[in-house]
Amino acid sequence: MKIMLYSQHILGIGHFFRSMEIARALHGHEVMFVEGGDPLLGFNPPAHVSRFLLPPLMMDAEFKAMEVRQGSLEDIKTARAKLLMEAFRDFAPQAFMTELFPFGRRQFRFELMPILQMIRENRMPVRVVCSLRDILVEKTNQAAYEKWVLDLLNTYYDLLLVHSDPRLITLEETFTQVDKIRVPVHYTGFVTRPLPVVQKEPGQKVIVASSGGGKVGVDLLASAILAVQSLPDPNLLLKVFVGPFMEAADQEFLQQFAARDLRTTLLPFSPDFLAELMAAELSISMAGYNTCMDILNTGVKAIVFPFPQNREQTLRAKKLESLGLVKMLGSLSGEKLSETIDETLKAAWLPFHGPSLDLAGAVRTAHFIEGLFGAEC
Figure 1 (cartoon, one colour):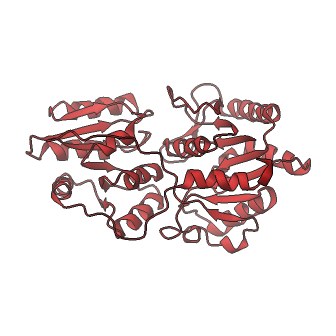
Figure 2 (figure 1 turned 45 degrees about the vertical axis):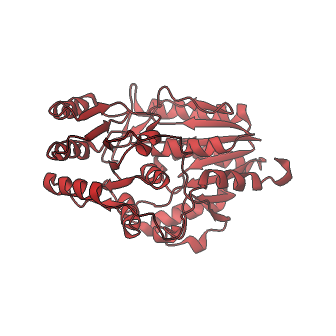
Figure 3 (figure 1 turned 180 degrees about the horizontal axis):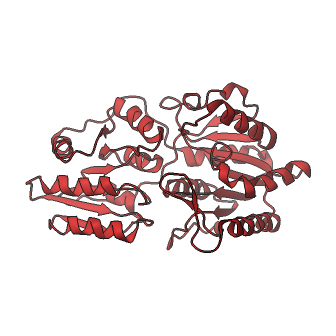
């Protein structure tokens, strides 16, 4: 089966990795992975997955305006729409999956709606699937937003897959009209990556600080560096991972802080980040979907500071904190962070005894997509 998976990351890289993990689980099929954001250089997809790179479009840190690397925005949009339509026609997929749209990425309807309309108007034998994370951001006019989503979802889509465990977070918590969705809705469980085999270095207390893609989170990393420097333990080792999209000026700013303490190392984004977490005693990060899934998957002690732009990360962090799985920071006060790091490192981190959260979202997503075609797969 041929599957086209459209994924547009606009600020971080969480959307890319979640969608790529789903593409990985669709082994046995031919997957065209469409990327619309800044491409993650050096990433090698599985053999059955081909990357199709559109001219990149990103959003600024305030989510107010699109950014382009060169040329005009309108020219880039026109080129993208043409390229995507040509790729769709040439590839001729049996399934077309859009990550987040129509629940998000409304700014990209200029290139998605022509394909959705063509599929419907020509009655093409293509099943359309929406791939949706656990939490939606709030909207100024929630009622109008939900009506727009429902109109598109019920008109053009065949299946909605929610990458969450409803025992932790349900779609109803951030989308009030779930009862008006007319296509099948399935929870897949959370999408996580397979764990590598790692051995911890004896005697060292490794702390990993990260900020996802790196366009935001510089203040968190700076606070983590300063907080660790105030702790006297000589066995502490702080690894600070800068995201692939972090501005050079921000990296230089962090490097100046890191240079003050030999226990601190500034490192580039690592494709083996999961292994770094498994070898660590503590993670300090924001509370994006992928980072939280990595925390749950590895069982590492974790301190999170949610991205304050909207409710998404705060809601996720509060849910996980209520289960004793993370500690959430309310501010980046240096003294408070130092105390929290020290207390968390010293505390016994007991195994979680609550309901076992479903972390098999990628595999279940593949099964639901294959289920649309039955024996044809």
